[in-house]
Length: 338
Ligand SMILES: Cc1cc2nc3c(=O)[nH]c(=O)nc-3n(C[C@H](O)[C@H](O)[C@H](O)COP(=O)(O)OP(=O)(O)OC[C@H]3O[C@@H](n4cnc5c(N)ncnc54)[C@H](O)[C@@H]3O)c2cc1C
Image 1 (cartoon, protein in one colour):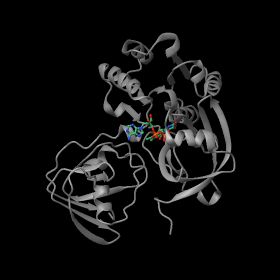
Image 2 (spheres, protein in one colour):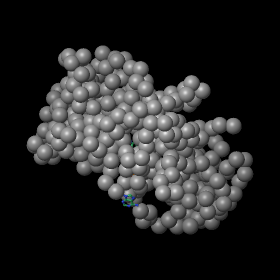
Image 3 (tube, rainbow, N blue to C red):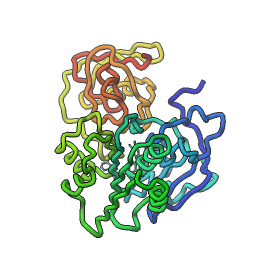
């Protein structure tokens, strides 16, 4: 039986050179998997490949929008020293198959009769490109894109964005910022792009310092959390080390109808604890993004080091990403079957 946690081999139909260090990969979703791979613009997939014999799992957003008839496409930028991105750019070619998990993610277009103001930096344009295509095709909302890049050669989707601007005069405005010409963006300049659109919905994806600056600017003009949607391209190096000391004694794990009780080892996540108990719990990205390792806390509490997948309501209801969850109560009951 197949579950949401199954990877599926998808064949690469086409490889498109976007810039010197970025390529798009068009993937073939066979009709039998159409429902599994149905997605909303802005979502991502989790990809698993073997690099030099070791399994590597990473997340990649779709740059395609299902609302404009795009084929299912991810766009990958080379990260210096990065395992998966270099492997994909240097090795993956038409006809190859890669293991892909069903789409996931909360970074999608939210309904509202207000402008869409998007801040993209570098490869952060990938999900934002999809979202703005959907906004233009399915709504009458004004769309403003601030697209920051190192230099003109590193701008991804430059031509496609210019075409969209021509096709939607007065509805889409693209502000292009190049560090090579004007240095890094600052709060005052970012503020200028918002203008009087303080009722807008804001979408942000890019390098952490850029996102921090955008968030600082938006907080400074009183933007409410409900107006702000953020995607973080987390990598293994971003996961903070576990420094807190825990008072947890016991972790009770409910998995596949079986209850297992183990002593807690300080520094372990709930996923580590389950694996140490000899169980085979579901997991994939181990970066707090794909939600494969999700479970319900029937008792006790935990903090999440990274949460790129759960809504505030889910967190309030006791749902945890076990790969990121550090228990904080004396006893914790983790229910994978809930
Ligand atoms: C939801 C989501 C969507 C994403 N979408 C996209 C997308 O559309 N396009 C895209 O290009 N990327 C995207 N990413 C980023 C992508 O998943 C990878 O993180 C990126 O490609 C780098 O992976 P890598 O294997 O090449 O690099 P890694 O091998 O993971 O290395 C990344 C960097 O971290 C450093 N590093 C690695 N391990 C450690 C460590 N233990 N300690 C300290 N530093 C370390 C490396 O030196 C390198 O600089 C997304 C990420 C997420 C979470």
